[in-house]
Image 1 (cartoon, rainbow, N blue to C red):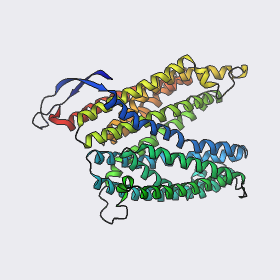
Image 2: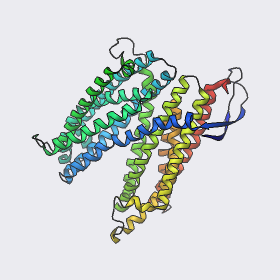
Image 3: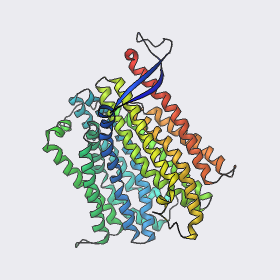
Image 4: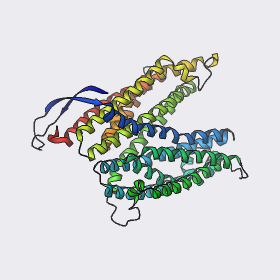
Length: 481
């Protein structure tokens, strides 16, 4: 099956590889083949989407288990989730640079360089894990600085200390998976994500409640459950890799002593990604606080809207990661026009997916809302109306977000991460937050005003990223146009 995709692209062509030629316009028509363009992306994205959903499951079950121990324990657990989650998005974002470099070298069929990137990536994982260990071990002091009650912090500390022992294993695990994602082995990534999730859920349940003859450790059992599971998983993954040559070949230099030639490049590409994730997580945290100014009902409605935003956007991040890997392979193979086409195909797929979600938001919002609240209880009618309003605007926001995040994936394939970081900060902190505040408070629009601000920020972001993507493609392609 083939489709005609017409895209107008304005680029600076450089006929003699100079940087001073007058810009010219080119009008390009792509022939999109499902077999060669769409299916490779879907083959990468589908396991990664499932992987993202599966890896979010342990925290869901941890919350569920701790809720059975009482509201005080649950409050302490939520503090740990906030601290650990914020820390992870920064450090995991940095480690995601591994798959970007690996994808380029895989496209160029350079296994020697992939092995060196894998070694340097594992070294970086250990370095970041040491930082994470110190922060988690001293997490109680951080929580106290944020004004949390000492009694809650004491409980959180009993969770944080065993959790700190998991980070080395966890970060090594993530680094290995990033290598495998970069070469396109997403099925094995999905398999081990399922294994580690099952282990965490089972071990945490056993140690929290004291099942099968083990002592009931309460909230500390959640931390030990993760630590034990992560170490079992990384040992199993290393054993599995060593048994198969097709995986082992990419890790054969992890004990090779030489200059860490890729470490600086991993930090250069990865740190802006991590900082961008941190800025976005912080924005939604501030959004929740500002919603609280409008009342607890508005805050609750916002939380439910964010709940679905998080689920569906995780799928878009998977498509973006697939775009990064697919484009990296093609760029490494010096097929730049095919890489450009792959980028646009991924953006279209993401936009279409979120458009279908938008239809559900607009046509049957109560179907989703009924998961969280009783939609037939008159007490909830006011809350129900607020949630429906937020979901209607969220539908528009998520379409723009799908395009924005997909452009991030395409630009990362071009090793452009600093621009995306600046655009993310601009769209969320310089446009969405102030505009949302003006809409919500001075203009008296209410909670929906903040979401209108987010739509505005995302739309501006898409415009800037579209310009940057075309400029980068033109700059890298030169006369290949």
